[in-house]
Length: 163
Image (cartoon, rainbow, N blue to C red):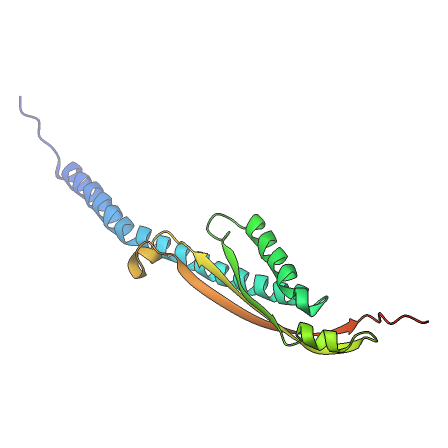
């Protein structure tokens, strides 16, 4: 005995197959777009964190003796690396320079006094996103630098003795 299929069942099966094909085609376009948007958000977050870290390093570097500014800035960078995620845990201190030199401070000895100047800090972060770096640079990370300058006033201590 031959079973007759109704045209309605054939049409329903064809529509279901068409929906599955459209879903697959749509996902093939949607998944890469979502991955690229995720990578771009990681890059933007990394750049903002690098700017904030550089600003904090410049502020902390300006808080004490200008000849030791690199030590204080490096401490901020080390803290940022400990707190960062695996994609953003590679902050680097490139430079930390003060407009006041050790000779300027030595010239004020033994009586001391105020010294004003600026501290400039340059930091870099290397970001390794999932998809975007394959398109632009291959396997090397993306490098982003930030430069911040912070003013300071330091009082050189009085080391003169009374005889």
